[in-house]
Structures are given as C-alpha cells and as structure tokens.
Image (cartoon, rainbow, N blue to C red; front, top):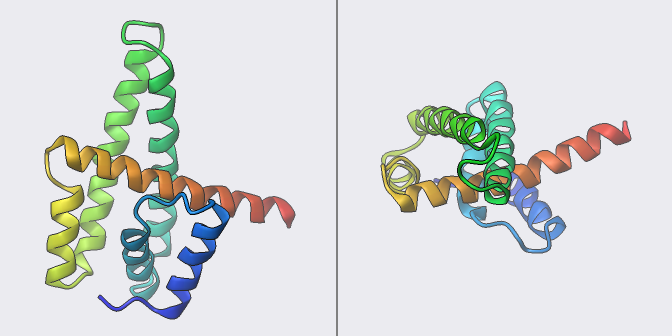
Amino acid sequence: MIISQDTNEVVKFLQDLSGGNLRKPNDLEVFLEIGASFGQEILMNDFIFNGASIWYLSQALKKIKQGEEGFNKLEKELKENLIKFQSQINTFNSFSDNETSTRISNVYLQNTQGSYLNLIDMAHDLSELKYVQNTMKSKD
C-alpha cells in the first residue's frame, strides 16, 4: 500500500510529539491512509476512540490484582473492546490490497498472545493520537 505524504507527516508529527514512543507507526499509517482514502471518517474516529479506551483499560488492569474489586468488570470491558477493535480492523482490511490485508490479519487478527500484544501496541498509538485530538479541541 502506498502511503501519502500527508499521512506520513501526521504520523511523523505524532512520533515527534510522543518522544519517539509510537509502537506501530507503520501500521498506524496504513489505518490512517485507508480511512482517508476511502472516506471512512466515522470508522477512523471510532477506531481511535476504541483504541484509546483499550489502552487505558489495559493500564488500569495492570494496577489492580485479580480478585480485587473492579478487576472482573475492567477485564470484561477490555475483552469487549478488543472484539470491537478486531472487527474495526476487519473493516479496514476490506478496503486494503491483498498483501496489506494478509499482513494486518497475521499481525492483529490471530487468536494468539502475540496478536493480543500487537492490539495493545496499536491501542497505545491510537491513545497518543486521541490525546492530540483532545488537546487541539481544547484550544478551540
């Protein structure tokens, strides 16, 4: 998939703003490019919001122990959001070429610990993007 200069610049800006902390910048470019190229603004906004939610839920779960109050509720919500996240990725895949679709499926849509960790990494990057969106909105 060819990534436009605009998309490259957005991810470069985000990478700089995050102190070089993006975990999946190349895949973020792919999702942003698909969203922009195919007019999927609603999907993209939902994807960003859901990704940020997943990131915050995963971080909250790290801070409490299994069996503590709220753990099961957070874990359930995280699982539900991950299922929705994978569904959103499937939708992005429906717009991508075969090579990109296969790679994204192998990275994010397998029932493996590696795919789970990749989803969390993408959620991290989307939370960085959501932070920038919120910061820009608050300046208006």
